[in-house]
Image (tube, rainbow, N blue to C red):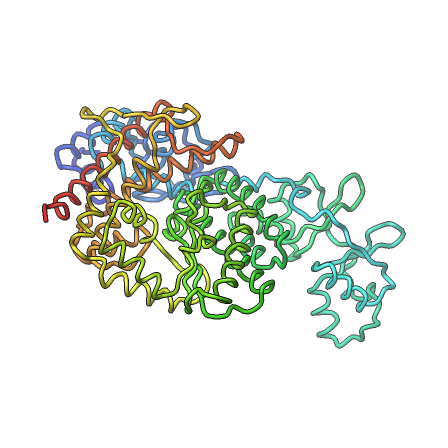
Length: 601
């Protein structure tokens, strides 16, 4: 095949299409061409595979994913420098372009967009292709251990009462200490109610006889196959000849990637403090599962934020039941990472109360008690108290609409050092529960005056007070924490700086969004930043956030303390290169802020 044909194809495929013509030609000259035949298993490793024609299947444990013209394979191994349990099978004869590892790495270093493309592709691939660790969980670890049974001559009304009292969807039917049947919710609907049978009908008349069962040491995917094959939703679980539990489809779905939805629902179903406090263990276990599945950190943050929102809403519901109806409308606000929806496990509480009435007399006493109930409850659920007292338990953070508007106006009109420090917290706010209208009114008051020149000037100067940890010759500048660990502070010297510069732009131009990505999108629409600038800053944020999550996940697995310090020696060459690029992007955006907002008044 002629070089020109290879070049012509690459010009139609991202990210190669963005390469300069001379580099594209040079790349084409180093590509090897391989013709694959149907049913062939491809042995290639440590090189990038680009599909030109044909159909290929990538096998990863129990799942298959199709690759067609323009799709790439092998980048995961090249980027992570780890062997991966993947195989490529040819389904239809086709041509493959093979790019050597050295050439791939050369272009990664030479072209930022080329590197960024495969990093984003890697993030999507890890999400879409990473086999859930729960596929290798044993059935006995997933099902409820408590077994509820009834005799066959019992009435269906007695069975329904038992199922209602125990909040279960099935009951086993036992005769002479042997399992002879199962009665489920579906049986009660289809065989009893639909048939118009009386309540005194014996259970044995409507039960499913000799139900399918599964061994406790079987894998979860085996249970899923059995249930799908026979269209059943309940499986009795056996161990050493005894029934030890019942596995339901809900148990299986709860153990998969959809688990966050069930945990959120579980949180909202709790009716007492003990149940909500116990959710901390479930959240920690979920984080372990999400880490094993290698979800992108931005998705994990959104999941965690939703979970902690649900906890706050549930504790508020309990507080209202305990204290009685509130004396006026209110909004429960959150600040910081929870407001921006980029929480990680180390996030503490940052919350406040916005009240319809002035906090005096009975109103103050009620909301003081409510704040203590909720904040202490959240702490028992794993969201620790804020050491800086940025919580609704602080009387200064329980204010009326007039009081909060006045506080924000004071920060804007008199930007003292303390006010500027407060700005990094209070200008990222969101309603978790209560009145959205109250908060909308407050936000309207804030945005009407936030663009004042003196405030923006001081806010911009404050955003430039810390620099990314890069020296003059782009070498890393390490620092040390209280545990004498040395490294790069990904939060203080990276992520927080991005939030700061974006917040300056947003407040200067009346952007109401709180999430940093949403603010960037709005700033592009307003032509405050161009698409390339916003894209670079987003990529830097995602990289730093991902590395910070990986530090926390490692600490979670090892039982160590959380840290934001990244030892660059623990990163591979590509990651160190990307980290330097991310810090350089932050420096560039700090310069943009300095040029636009820090001119002398």
